[in-house]
Amino acid sequence: MEDRKLSQFLSLVLRHAPERFGLTLDPFGWAKIDDILKAKPSVTRDALLRVVGDNDKQRFTISEDGRRIRANQGHSVKVALDLVAEEPPAELYHGTVDRFLPAIRKSGLKSMKRHHVHLSHDVETATKVAQRRGEPIVLTIDAAAMHSNGLTFFRSKNGVWLTGKVASKYIGYPES
Ligand code: HQG
Image 1 (cartoon, rainbow, N blue to C red):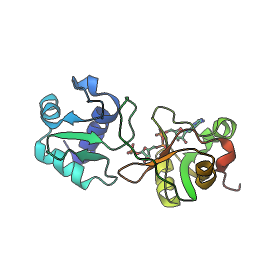
Image 2: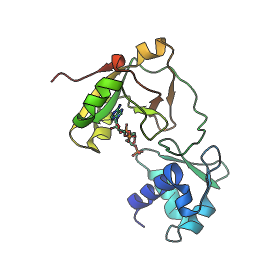
Image 3: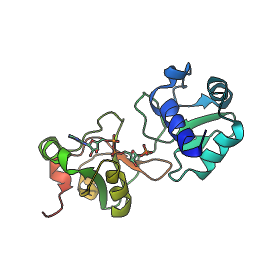
Image 4: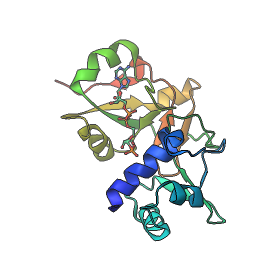
């Protein structure tokens, strides 16, 4: 299996649908590497370790004993990622597309199928996130105001900022 496909497969197994491959995640999101290799014989251990090591976004972590793997964020299945709350930078960014703006203006940013709203630390990263869906629109989030109003932020192992709902009053829209 080519590396990009293998990364997509690992995302599917470790974030969204382990049961589709007869696998279960522990409460913290870990799966046994041996079980994954058994479930998908076309994947070798070397390829799996290479994909984890090379991954552009550091999506996955191997456990200290080398036997388990988990996704660092992005889950739709329920897992406890033992995230630590952190003070965010004053501004964060969210990349989206025009067709979602009416709903976002009305009800703010919602986590949709994931556990959290995902925010980026710079415009460039937010632009890339948005480009998955079309012409990028980058929203500026007043993280300092949210934080001083008692809302919690987490930073995932791979540097993505996570929070609950972002109310519309904290969202800055690009000038049109
Ligand atoms: C939008 C990828 C309507 C939101 C990326 C987004 C990221 C609303 C979509 C990570 C809305 C959800 C996360 C509302 C938000 N009404 N639409 N009220 N609130 N939306 O994929 O942030 O490759 O769950 O703007 O690089 O796009 O998976 O979130 O367009 O880091 O590792 O609803 O996923 O990383 O989409 O992306 P997503 P996202 P990975």
